[in-house]
Image 1 (spheres, helix red, strand yellow):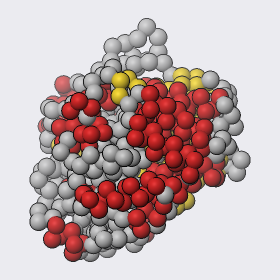
Image 2 (cartoon, rainbow, N blue to C red):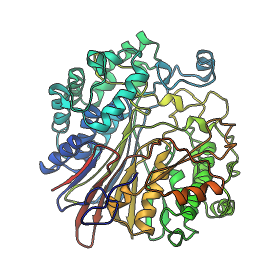
Image 3 (cartoon, rainbow, N blue to C red):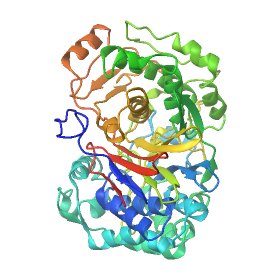
Image 4 (cartoon, rainbow, N blue to C red):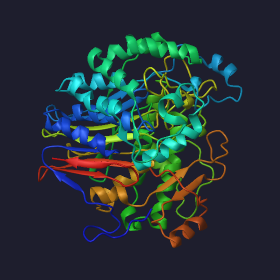
Length: 557
């Protein structure tokens, strides 16, 4: 991706950073950013604004999120000067045994659409757990903007319209999908006004009845009934059992900053391992997006993702294995496997005593990420998703929501960290990130897009820390996206995978990478969608950034 130079600021940057003192919100859709800002101006906390913005995103960007999906957050609480992690993901239904699904999935894989891919939605429970601990304003006020847009309608923005059309092509035959999301039989185009009155009613019930309304009340009854009718394994008992979990974020020191991610079942540990591997290398001397730099980051990514495929999953036993991925001796040994002049074609995990799972299960795109800071310098890094696009396509018309398809992240093979089991949480691609400097909060950020997320986190941190880019420039800079082989053989890549480069990376660099054995894909790729909010503690100023790969905006006051 290439952007022309602007009259002021660094070359190749799409817009200026946003500066403010009282509050800042950055999301992938301007209506959501404005809703979060409104909540801050009404005296709400960063958590309040994050909930409000997320609720609006579920209305205006159903291609990436909604209350049929899961949620994760990292919260900096200024009062206690501590970071808190929230895992609001849902589990596999009680009826989702490996034996039952093997007979229903003759191909050996859980499909990425339809009833068998559905897991319990965790988003609504996550809102209320977050609000109970860090909220100030009533939930009714926080959900009011989303209810208004769902009832009255909103004009669909450009990038979301493209994703909507892609989702329509894939999911239009799924139960209830066309009735809710394809008015007149077609996806809305950019600028078309779309309303979802059923979702407005669902959100109103939640605003009045709380989280129990969604998991035990009228919404739960409608949802479980629709699941029975459509062959979905999700039951009323599964909904009632949903519980979010506060977790301790994990960290890795990179140069002079501490980068924080959530523990498994998310893939944040892969980003931390990549940074730890890079910490022993002088990437700044290589030059930004040079052949040496890109080759090094791709090779580091291959090592971390081989370990990710083997050791990161929803089995609680995987937590200790994932933690071992960050140990000094292990990282040092893995770093020695990097060849400076040759791309690795076969990459196996290091030895941590676990059976690998199939890396082919680790893809997926379409997520929303948002960052918020308030006047007290509370900060929230939040990510939320239905997984692949709209999710499963299973859409109860009476609720106006699409259910997530996280179940396709499970494997049906026995003995793996991601083998499906009743009550087990699936592997998650969505990861919020946070960074501190000297124990003080500095940055909440994220890069949306399946397996692009750890790669994007690392590229953004390198841009900021190694190359001194500003917050907007760090997101706008051209990226690479490396994916595993399209013909997986277990956990190994037999051909080195595919490397996609945005158009701002020149032809000479491409030729050098190809000469080292990288297989460059000339087609399009998913390079993510970055949002960020930073606190300049020395000047006590908030900074916001929102890149042009999405429809979003950073707004402050």
